[in-house]
Image (cartoon, rainbow, N blue to C red; front, side, top):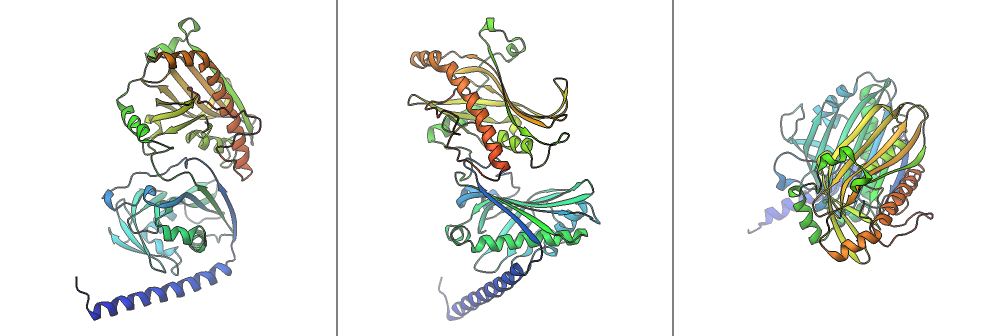
Length: 471
């Protein structure tokens, strides 16, 4: 293609226009940032391991245009902006409808302007697309990936400065209205990552953008905001799906799990007996206490539930889980990767149930959440493990529980069979003990606003060189 002088002139004018828009927009944004009269309550932390989710959720439409987290650069970042509206004049659904009809009613124009490029004006539906105009050399194409009565979710498209998704949601809560914006993404390019992480310019601009959005959403709902909570969590180990560190061999084995059957007669769990070789284990770890009644949104139960959801209670020095985060939890196949005496074992399991109940349990009022898996063909054991968080509603006590029913599988390799016979039971008990201690320390650290590195065991837990076959 031959470029004429007029083409070069037009390009230069476009560059000057972008530069002027960058300078004017950033100057106005800095002025508004400095003169903000709403208190920002900020907290940031680093968590090792994978983001427990939800992440990488389905996006309708042309998948070739989608820019997922795996296409980005740098660490995965989860950011939550939250404002409580004490005396709202509308409910959650009405506020989301107002914002969905035109996001510009809350967006600070000096930083972002939503231009609809696909779909009908005045409404928002799944599959609609926007181009978010921003100061500087970039704009942000997005697609509506989800829309409910009280939320909408946008996914980034190719060319966006980030790679991931962002969700806008509201809920009615005991006379108040809570509005939140939550994003999970990586930087779209290495240059943007430099602006965001080392230089922090893009990070502060982004904070101004979404904090202002929350402030204006509160004003639309009828009550000026006095405080906006900002929570940032950095996951330096998370580079996108599938979950967990993986090798080519592990990825090949993971792909075979949907075709593998459970490696025992499942009805045999109805009448487990030591006479048939079954071992039954129950382990309970206290995680703290909160007010009696319903679970607090930021209390030990809520924190522990997210840890259990992401399999973070398992010490990664013992065992790691690999799985597709897009698969629903209640039907998820997982590949457990463990090591013992220099050997690596890849053990397939399948989630067979999720518990999410409020009611009487063991004769007491309780709130329970957890999930169970069963072993697949090729595992060294047969049986089921249940992981559960329980809050006793009468006292406020919170516990992490592991219930396991197991017996050795038929192991063809005589060396592995002998090794499991010698060390298997010891490894079972070590896994349960370290999982409970890790849960206790992680919950305490997150409630305190800190985080212990995943590879560093707590002081009172022995660092085991082997991998539990029971994880």
